[in-house]
Image (cartoon, rainbow, N blue to C red; front, top):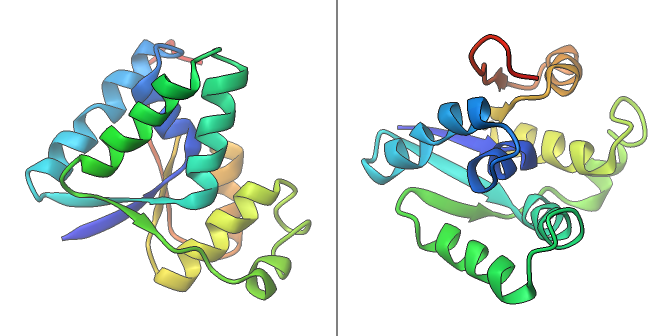
Length: 144
């Protein structure tokens, strides 16, 4: 069974209606995980970034945001994954990854040899240059 590491943008597209096209694409993955066709991994930094965006951008309450994390953790086939250590992350930030969260995700993906799923084309390009597995999820034409 294949395991995928989820980028924050995937979770945001699943949880919110920020992009109905992306939501349509990503909504199949938790169903696949629940049916044991794949496993989805979430890091602590992705969960923290998700909490920040839900609270600050979407003005979700602490209770609503907490419920999202609890429901995510109870979804069959979804697991929370320990991140790579700081010394490894420091090798990837701020170069080649300008975003600290991206560097953590990249380092964790490499350490666990798990491909990352994302909608972010630039993020994927940097991953591939670093020889880290990354799959770009494609929303139907006309999105973003």
